[in-house]
Length: 362
Length: 230
Image 1 (spheres, rainbow over the protein chains, first blue to last red):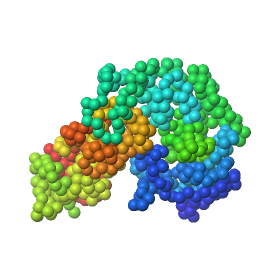
Image 2 (cartoon, each protein chain N blue to C red; image 1 turned 120 degrees about the vertical axis):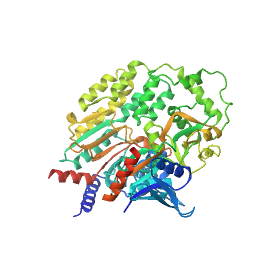
Image 3 (cartoon, rainbow over the protein chains, first blue to last red; image 1 turned 180 degrees about the vertical axis):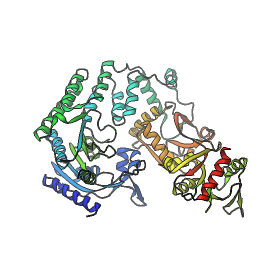
Image 4 (cartoon, rainbow over the protein chains, first blue to last red; image 1 turned 90 degrees about the vertical axis):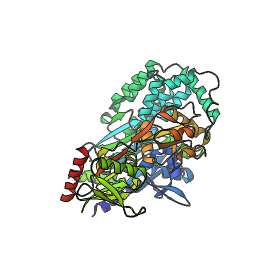
């Protein structure tokens, strides 16, 4: 059999396994309207996805993943609870790394269910781990929800929290915002000059463009308020930094985070949810004592995940992308649901990489 | 076959390139009628002059259809994501200086840095229901710069000319464009962001790593680099 037909056969088998686990097969179209993806990810998606267009429908993207169309389909016509599976090509531009495939098969399993998120998280993780058994992989897990709870629980203004929340997935900008809010980096000189001026500031320059004078004045007012806001307290800041650095096996990670919660009590409910997930994973036979947990895991590449996140990596092949990955994306259903929302969790496998690793083993 | 040198086919960039090579003992000239893009080289045996639009030179180098080429750093980096693997920078030529910059309306007195821009982009989107539009023709360079800086909630809109005018026409909120003196910006009531320098560009002589080199072409290349560095 050719490499491609082997991969297709493996993909079909994996999808069958997911069907047997109770999922309904879905087949979203290859072309997705670009607008939704751009609204969600911003211009960055153009660096990752192929864009094409015609004069009638405008810009379309070759699907960069299945999650988005599956969520849209579910929000439109799905009954609850629901489990879906799919197998098919996704397309990613790899302009900086031509050795990586720009077209590959993904097989996925997604759960939309309100009742027991911990059980659903564990179900997805355990089912995917089962498909990968025997392969020399390391599983990484994390929970963006804990970090979000920590930010929401900071003793500071809503404006600062909103700015930090907006950049949870951009660690560098998050860091620089935090430094400003902690009073660690001085305000730029031009900002100080702007804030020290009195009275109306607009009016001297020609008003130009769609952003109005009122918007400029409103922001200056916000900047003045912010300059008068006391810095984030040292103990909270150290706790947040300690939290972001947690990288341990699950039992030790939980212990460390409970200690951190003394200064950041707002994370306790999120930690309780983690406890629930761990119990559910244990019940499904996952070896918790050797499972890795990184509090910052999933912050760079998985923008729509907002709770449990995981990935499976080939330890001997650090050059490869994750063989499987997934997570919880409740907020995505809210954004796409136009008022509706439903807790959702899912994951995908790469059959081509699985076959490659199996060949390497034999 | 001969060693092919691609040079911009018209304007000041062509003239200055001809001057630059002339100072180093290499005579480049257009031949035939004013409208015919043919050229000749004297000074090194076995070289051929190819006159091209400056914008096409990066692609021709990357495809290996020309061995050497003169074009701006901005065009190379915009058009070739893997330019370091495809091209070797032989010599900056010291002219054609231009900076790719980010500029916002002067009336945005609250905006001076990328931090400000990011904050404004967020509230602009909330207020107006669409992402803050940046007019440019340098999509890749600007996107990578803003990604690196962690700026979100913006949108690139294509502008192939008169970019500074897009803000007044309200087809964009700000621009990312090439400037050498900043005069056009000021005339259009725009100002630079203090940390918004995306790229400093100048005309540069590039060598294709992709092209094949015969014995004779190697000899010609050696003679040429001898002239340039000698």
